[in-house]
Image (cartoon, rainbow, N blue to C red; front, side, top):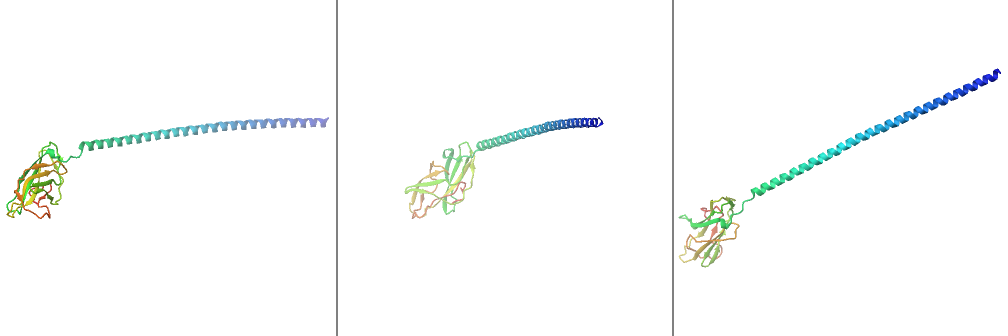
Length: 234
């Protein structure tokens, strides 16, 4: 009896211990599951927060990029406006046109100085066109004679660039040899003047000596100086 009771108590103790062990295991599993769930939820929350942060940063970067693009576009717009302003200024200032034959009054006078070896004719060009224009270089000069037309040869002097305001005048010189042969020589009947860079010619009376000496044709006896050379001779 005593032995059976002892075994019964021992069996009960084993059962109770097993039950407690199972309960403890269940509690542990439940806690672990809760911790895992909590950790998972917390991790998801953290991940979500990071994603939100990244999204916000990304949005900010994109916004910044758009803002930068906007500034760039604005800069381009300014550059274009500047270019337009420069173009208008250039068009507004514009380059002066050359003095056309029709806006010039052209006259010629004898300008020979006593004692000079050659004769000189001064041709004056006056701007009567009402607008400032460019006048520089050499005029075309031809002498009409009974033996044909004689073209004046340039002296080779470097012309100075210049402009001619409305009402202003400028002159150049034509030099020619005197006829000292005692013969009739080559009789001069007229003077043809073509302003620099023009094709329209003006015919004038020749104010100098009536004739040129006959030459062998080895060179033009008549010389023309650049615009502004009147009084300088040939």
